[in-house]
Structures are given as structure tokens and as C-alpha cells.
Amino acid sequence: MQTGPVSSSSLPGTLATLRSDVFAGIVVFLVALPLCLGIATASGVAPFAGLVSGIIGGLVVALLSGSHLSVSGPAAGLVVIVVSAIASLGSFSAFLTAVLLSGAFQFGFGMLRAGRFAAYVPTSVIKGMLAAIGILLIVKQLPLAAGLAPGAGTAATGTAGAALLETPFGNVSVAAALVALASLVLLLGWETRALRRFRFVRAVPAPLAVVVLGIGATLVLDSIAPSLALPTEHRVALPELESLGALANAISLPDFTQIINPDVWRVALTVAIVASLETLLSLEAVEQIDPKRRAASPDRELKAQGVGNVLAGALGGLPLTAVIVRSSANVHAGAQSRWAAVIHGVLLLASVFVLTSMINLIPLACLAAILVHTGYKLAKPRLFLSVAREGFDRFAPFTATIVGVLATDLLLGIAIGLAMSFALALRVNVQHALTFAHHHDHYLLSFRKDISFLGKVQLKHCLKQIPNGATLIVDASRADFIDPDVREAVEAFAQEAPKRGIVLERKQWTERPAPARLGPRVKLGGDAAAS
Image (tube, rainbow, N blue to C red; front, side, top):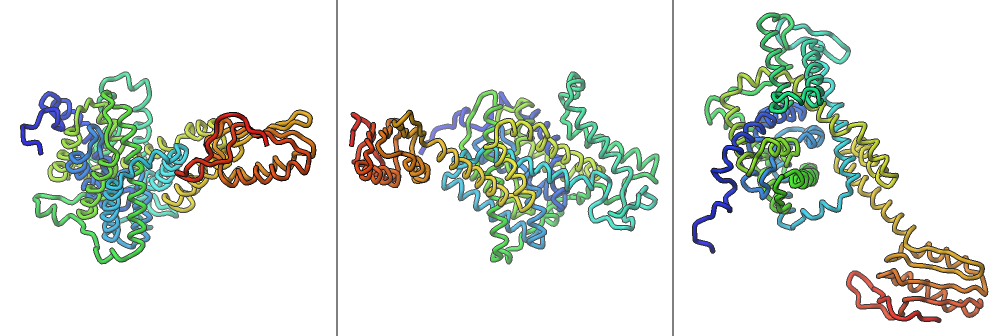
């Protein structure tokens, strides 16, 4: 055990980088605050649940993670799972039990060093999953962005005299719809080259600008046009917390009696798999944009996320992952170490006590607009065109994953995409394992690569085409592995060849298989052997 003083290089940050980390932490806080609130609202739970996850992501996961720049919190990609899980389990407390179990699963994944398996998921399936999530986000948030309050009926439940328009779907707030429209215009314009020329636009995150716009609209309407003001159900409703005791009372606790419910375990496994996949993808993306190209252990990251989700489930938070939006904001703000993520967590915790009155002025329509814009970025039409140009073998799993997610659920949709990718890979492997050509009565059967038992059907089809009296050359010089079933088919043909007057020559073929590792193998090499 090392007993000497700890070197500065082993610390997560130094005083030399503290200034950069503080600035980056403030920027990430300004990005994360509206996203935490918006994701919680989209998930149909109290906004406080989103802040709990953001705080845990900053104060716990950031310290346990091996990543220097990754930032964790509630993810838009899990909204679909959260909504369907709460509906199927019947209560948020039962879902919290599933979140806690999902964290235990993730920690187990890390202990089993399962992080490397994420590399086996095809890119087309991942793109399809994200595109499907984007479509679902847009579909689910459009009603709120259009001014329809969650659970709104035919009667107004908001402030008296509020401008509400009766529709077959419920009472629509005209002011909320206009705020959402203005927010979407601002979000789209914030990324244009014309506005990016201004230093102010480059310095202020787009979600923060939208939130400021919404708060300003609320204040203006409340003061000069009360009859047009936003109803209360169209605003964030964060409880006032004046002490730690009030904070403890606001925390939702899991229902541990649901731990014997098999549906809880199914939801837990779904959350663990999808959250782990999104975390590992974000981790890889952060490594690519890190100016210092610092790598992080995926298994350590899974264990850190597991601890975070155990705490999130125990303290009434949403499931969390490493999130690329916050992480990229962290990198671009000049963060040098994980202390930037910790500072963002501290600020989120402080906002619960000192910014509640301001947060409650935020229109839900603003948060819906942010999530609609996020969904659009995940499912841009350009993405569909680019994947289509890559060919059928890429576009088919991409489309199958989207259709599967939209028709069933996220985990089953990913499984459908993986099955499609596997089927197409088998088809390519079988079709290109061997080639067959002939000139007059001379035939060439060439093994182009390793050939498994799946190639036996094509092999037999080729051998049936050899006429009596012909010459056949079987060339195995480019194959490292030949399945025993394929060898038996060739040997059976060799025994019948003399009776039909067929001359069979085998190049780089030996009858003695090498010792098996993953299966019987044939050692190929040496002189050509003629039968």
C-alpha cells in the first residue's frame, strides 16, 4: 500500500485548472437545469425528480467515474422507458424500485467487465434507436408545446380569466403555444451561422436563452396582461424548500414491496441495458472531442453509473446516464477535470433552495420546445438519407430498429435491429464464402475465407453442377478455417468422383484437422494434393 503523499497528478483536478473548471461548471449548470426540468416533465413526474438525478450525477457519479469530462444526469433517451414503465407498474414508487435494481445491474455489468460488448452493437442499430427516441420525443411533447396542459380537460383549472381555447382535446393556452413557437424559432436560429457570429450567442447555451425568454414572457403577461397569463398547470411546479427537513420531505421513496414483481425486474433490466449503452456511447464521443484524448475505463464508468442509479432510485430521482449534450457543453466551455461536473452538481443543489421562485416562472411550453428540438436533432431527415446512401445492409437494421421501437418498446426494438443485422451478416458470410467458375470442362471451386457449416448448402449446389468427365479444382489456400460439415461434403464428393470420371484436385488442403480451439480446424498449407 502506498503511504506517501498523493501527487497532484493523481488528483481529479488542480488549482491551476480550477478557474477553467468553475467556468465550465457554471455553463453546464445553465444547460443542465432546463434539461433536468424538461425531462422530468416529459416523463410525467415532478420536476424535482429530474433535479435529484442531476445532483447525483454531479456530486457522486463524477467523482467515481474515470472520465475527466463526462457529465451525467437524466437523459432524454430514457423518457420513453420511464413513461411506459410508470404506466405498466402503476406507480412512481414501484418504478423507483426498478431504477434502484437497474443500478445494481449496471454495477454488476462493470464487475463482469461487460463494457467492451457495446462495441459489438452495429452503428446502424444505435442510430435507429436514437432516431426512434427522437420521433417519440417529438410526438409526446407536441401537445404540451401546442398549449395543451398535461391532464387538461374541458374545464379550465388554471388562473381565472386565462386565455384558454376549447378544443376536442382539452383547453389550449394560446400564450403557451406562442411561447413554444417563439422558443422553437429561437432554438433553430441560435445555431445558424448568422447568429453564431455574435460572442453573446456563442457564450450563452440555447436552452438557457429559451428559459430566459419563457421567464420574461411569464413576468410580462402577469404584470401587464393578466387575462392572457399562463395558467398554473402550464408552469413548472417545484416545491419551496427552506430547509434540509423540507428537502427530505420532498424526496420520494421506492416501494420495496414491489421487488417481488417480475415486471419491476423486467423494467430494471431494460433501463440498465439502455442506460449502459447510452453511457458507453457518450463516453466514446467525449474521448473523441477531448483535446487531450484522455481515455476512460468503460467498466469503471458502468460501476459509477450503477452507484448513481442506486442512489437515484433510493432518493426519488430519474434514471441517469452520461449525457453527450451536457458533456459536449463541458468540453467546449474549457473544462479540464471532473471538478467541472462536480461544480455543476453543487449549483443544481443550490438552485433547489435559492432559485425555486424563479424556476416556477418557467413555462412548460419552453421545456417542451427544448425536447422537441432535441428530438429533431436525433431524427433529422438528413440522417435517414445518409444511412440510406450507405446501402441496404445498413439501412435495413436502421429501419427495423425504428419500426421495432415505435411498435413495441425500446429494448425489443433494439433486439429486432440486432436480429436484422445478424441475419444480414450471415447472408453476406454465406454468399461470399466461396466462388465457383468454369471454362469448358474445367471447374474451379475457391474458398475465399473461413467457411462455416452455413456454407454447406451453397457448396452442395455447386458440386451438383459438375458434369461427368470434368476436372474440378478445390482451392482452399485463402481459408483459415473449414467447418467439418464442409470437409465431409468435399470428401463425399471425392469418393464418388472416380465413378463419374471426374478428376478432383485439392490445393492447400490436408485431411488432418488441427487441434480444436473454438471448433475443429484445418491446417492449410504446403504442396497441392491430388486425389
